[in-house]
Length: 167
Image (cartoon, rainbow, N blue to C red; front, side, top):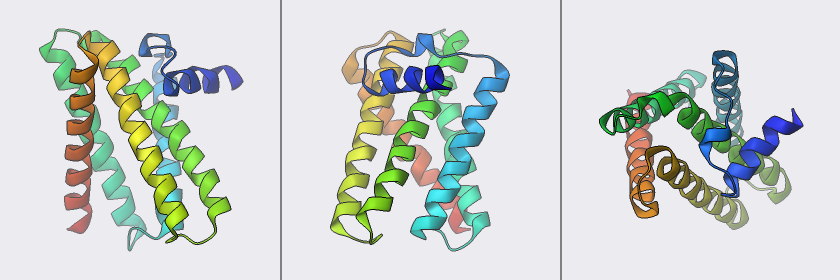
């Protein structure tokens, strides 16, 4: 377990690339499941969604949009064989960062406080930077192109998740 955490921790610190991430199907499925469970926990803790179904819908649609867009861009560059490592790296790093957010939220007290908002903003920004780094390494593009792709994927998947959960 420690070794798995260190893989994603080193990715979050931009020390290693997504090529070190295990790509066994059971590992990918467990990372996706853990990420979804933590997302549901955090959403219900914050009270961001009115129902559990809306929370699940938003998470599943956002994750599917992220995975689809990532695969499509890799496919366009004829690097679709890198998809399992890339998507596992993206979701695994988000799992570490969202887990850190969940722990830090326990210390800030009030959910709607300035401290909670600031911590959330910093972790979101770091998440986008890590995603840009992962995409940069996976696609053999410049750092700037990786960041632009990460921002686009993040905005699109979040918007699509919000639309899906509001219906």
